[in-house]
Length: 155
Image (cartoon, one colour):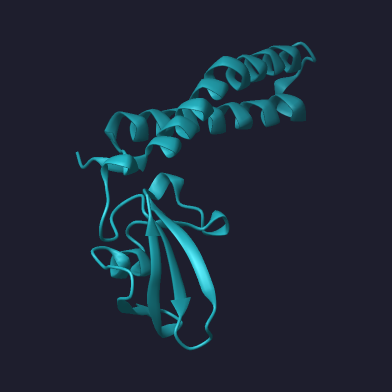
């Protein structure tokens, strides 16, 4: 199977979520199911069905996290420098609007555009990889072609 690149912080976050699900959420839902069963007829017991649905979600997420963690390849940004690589934090400027943005290039499981964490496979991240400060890049996206200049790179 293909390795999944993660930052150290992303790996720790996924491990913490897995630990929380196994040590807190799973026991709580098992208890909730047991309590709902005590209320009698399961066919019309909304609490029971809601608890079972939540249990299914929790178990699915545990399996997903275990899969990601087992295939994770943690990339240490402290060992990197130079051009844009995985885990870099890159500040760019839109050449049309002069709007500055800063993004960190991360693995798919930890990508979150609202937190400025770009999936390494996104069009913008792919355009940034291997470039240096001062370089201009062209990004083709569903919204059209945009041009950016790389202002800085930090690891």
